[in-house]
Each structure stands twice: as structure tokens, then as C-alpha cells.
Length: 346
Image (cartoon, rainbow, N blue to C red; front, side, top):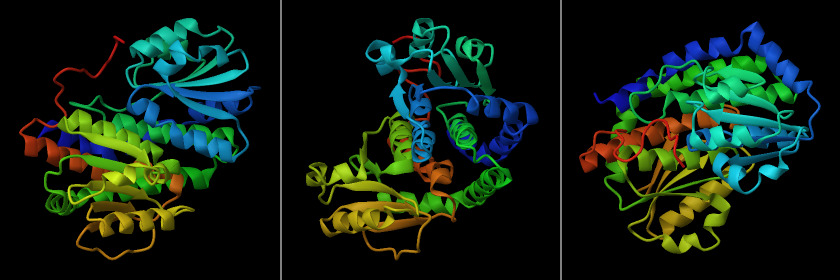
């Protein structure tokens, strides 16, 4: 078993242990203090999967009356740092706490700006700057991000619900439940792995499609496929796909659609059928109503959960796909060639 697959299979256990540290009295007190801060806007920033993890928290807070934005730290650093002031709550996510763009951004922001630091190293530049530091508390991966990405999703979920005043026992139990469901999914991973391998084979490229809370999954998933398997992947908004990229679809097209139960489930399913009708194949990842498999549609049916929590679980099939593609190309899954776990240089 390669190190990347070992990291995938370890997620339910390590994330379960980490989650217990997130809901200590001290951390819940910090989240309450953040909610009591007087700020005009919340800005989320990170790089790579740390950036991608922020979308769900931002959407949730927007739905609950907060003004929010999500940026790559590089874009914020070089082009839009002037929007940060003493009335900005800046949420920075970096597993290492030493990403080059994060370090430079920290040196540029006003000292009065309150910073929420989500990192796996509290002694890092980010951890030291954080007015409200939170430790991911997961073992570093042997290869590219798995549990550190999902742990960021979980902490951001708790933070968003706390700021919105909705972090209660039910919200905490829902996270416990989703980790249990992830455990069941991974327990049977060999069955799912074979289904995905047999359906996709070795496609020329992959297109990941989703909307809303699935933004985290399409962008992080596309990144993992590139990193783990050195394989071309494209991440697109499902609605935007109809505005031009639909022309890509033919018999060589392979897509992955994230379709959680929610306001756009039917639209995502219709898109899957339209792609099939044009000769393309689709892996349809959902926790919605049971759909029938077809020659060119492979349903991956996950257990029911809140739409915001779905990315915690639906990234697992993408991790398995990335593992399959890497092995198919003869690469050691997740082993870096040109990059590294910590990208300190821009």
C-alpha cells in the first residue's frame, strides 16, 4: 500500500481525534469571542487546498447576514490588500503556517486587524500572528494533503456556525456523524475504488463540476488530481459549464459532478444526463435521491448529510480516483517531483 492511500484510509481515525480537540471549552470560548468582535467584513485567504477549504464557511456566513470574501493569499497580497483594515476579520488558513504568500501578507496587514489563524503549527509565522489561533492537530501527511485539508474544512465549519450563532450540540453532533459516515465509506473503499477504476479507465483528462458548497470539492479535488497523479484536470462551476465549455463534450469526455441534496440537485442531474446524451461519461457524487446507473453515468451514493458538510465526505472518491490515475501512469501517488509540502517561495 502506498503512502497516499494509507493517508486516505487514516482520515476517519485521525480526524475523529482532531475533532475532539476542536470542541474543547477553550476553543469554543475563542469562537464565541470571535463572534463578539465588531467587524465589517470577514476575509478568508489561503493557498492551494487551504484556499479551497474556505468556500463553504464564506457561503454559510453570507447566508446568515455577514459580508464575506474568499481570496487566494497571493491575489490578496499583490492586488487587493488595501481592502483589509482594522475593521476586517481576516481568516488565514495554512497547514504549515509558512506559505510564502501568507508570510508576506502578514507583514503587510495593519497591526489592528484581527487574525484568525488556522494552521497545523502554532509556532509558525501564521500561528504566532494569530489573535485567535486554532491548531489542526493532525499528523502531517506522507504525501499531498488529505486529512489536513479535511481538518481545515471541519474547523472552518465550526467557526462559521459559531460566528452565525448556530454552534450548538446539534451542529457538533452533525460533524461527529459525518466523520462516522466517512469511516463507513472508507471501510468499503476497495469496492468503490474498483467501480471508479472500471468506469473511468484512463481518460484523457477530467472535468470536475459543482456549485455552492461544492466549490471546495471541485477546486481541491482538481488540485489533488494534478498533484497526486500529475494528470490534467479542470474545475468549473456547473452553471458556467453550459456557457461555452459544454462544447468540450464528446466520447473522450469524462466528468465528475458533485450534486449534494439541495436547491441545485435537479440542475446537476440534468447536466449529467445532457453530458451522457452527447457521448460523455459522468461520475455523479451525491447524497440526494437514489439515481439509476447508466452506461455513461456512475452514481456514487453517499449517506445523507447537511449540504455544507458534504465536502468533508465527498472528497474521498476524488482521492481514490487520483490514486488510481497515478498508479495507471506509473507514478508513486502523491510523491512530489517539482513542488513540496511547504511552498515558501512565490
